[in-house]
Length: 187
Image 1 (cartoon, rainbow, N blue to C red):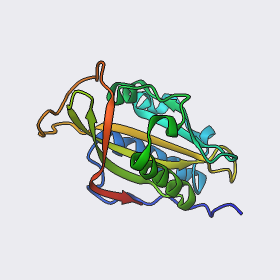
Image 2: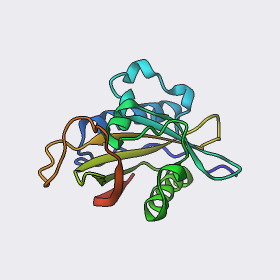
Image 3: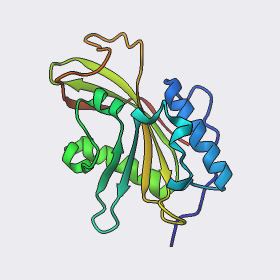
């Protein structure tokens, strides 16, 4: 039996650190309110959010295996993460506790039809560090077929931590993800 369709709540003031996250959530929420529940993939109009596209991802939970497959991962995400995610499986990109944490968030988004916002710390192979805000929201492939997680990844600017980096990541790979360095929000 499919989970009930939930109407998108207004995110509490101060929820987002990145204007990009706020803009994408507001767009997703407009789609959800128009649909009366979780938006469909076909509701999305890339032309309306062209400036956000480099920072968006879509991960699909495969019904048979339960694995998450990145159908789309924008170029801005590749620049931040130092690795292309499109057409890769989550369990090819992460392992151990990092994999467990991300899978649990993706499953919660799909099972409970909630949005989850988290702030993560990324440590690169040269020991440089950056904080990112990641927004994860449910999206349906068709009526009642909610198996897509759509999200937005944004660097949090003006990070004053030692070894903080700016600009695109060149020849770097994330070697550690510090989960929930700020409280996680589900709404």
